[in-house]
Length: 57
Image 1 (tube, rainbow, N blue to C red):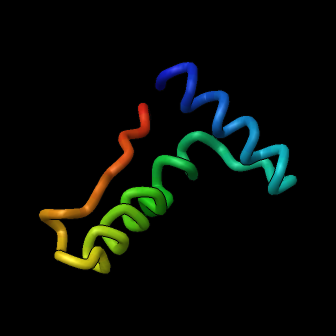
Image 2 (cartoon, rainbow, N blue to C red):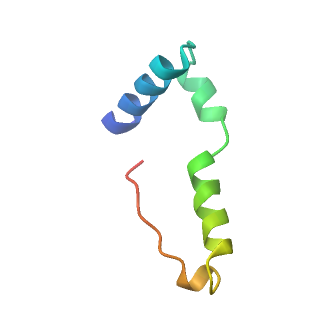
C-alpha cells in the first residue's frame, strides 16, 4: 500500500467516524473507477473523447 492510499484511508476513517479495516477497504467497490467509467460513457462523443485525470492510487 502506498503512503497516499494509507493517508486517504486514514482521512476516510476520520470523516466517516467508523473503524474500517484495510481488508474492508480492499473489498469495497472501486467507486472512483466507476465514476470515471460513467463520466466517459456520458461524454459528448463517447469514451474516445473523454478527458481523464489520472490519480496516483
